[in-house]
Amino acid sequence: MARTATQAQLGLEKLEQQRKEALEKLEHLRIDLRNMAEPSADETDTDAYEREKLWALAQTVERKLRSIEEAIELAQNGAYGLCQSCGQRIEPARLEILPETTLCLECQRAYERKNKRARY
Image 1: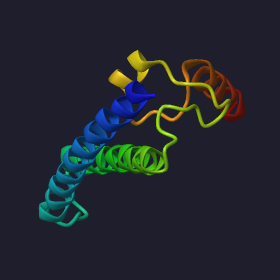
Image 2: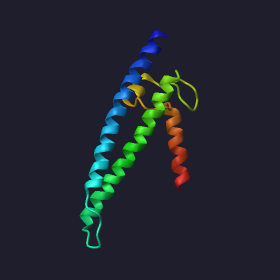
Image 3: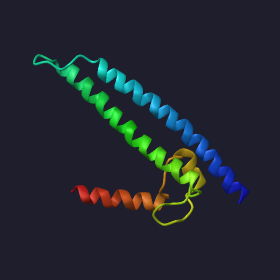
C-alpha cells in the first residue's frame, strides 16, 4: 500500500511539472500567434504555413494539458494508476513514460482500433 501511495505521489509531482511546462509552452505559442501579422490578400504561403503550424501546435498542447489535468484529478481522488476503462492497474513502466495516461496498454490499443475504424 505504501508503494502505491508513493507511486501516486511521484506521479502527481510529475503531472504537476508537466502541467506547468504545458501551460508555459501554450502561453508562448499564443504570444507567437498574436505577434504574427494579420493575414493579408498577398500573404505568402510561408506565412500561412507558419500560422497554421503554430495553431496546430497550440491545439496539441491544449489536448495534452487536458489529459494532464484529468490525470491530476484522478490522482487527487486516489484513482491514479488505475485504467479508467477496465479498472486494472496501469503498468508502472507505462506511467513512467506517460504519467498522464488513464488507460492500460490493452485498453489504449482497443480505443485506438475503435477510433481508427470510426474514421473510415
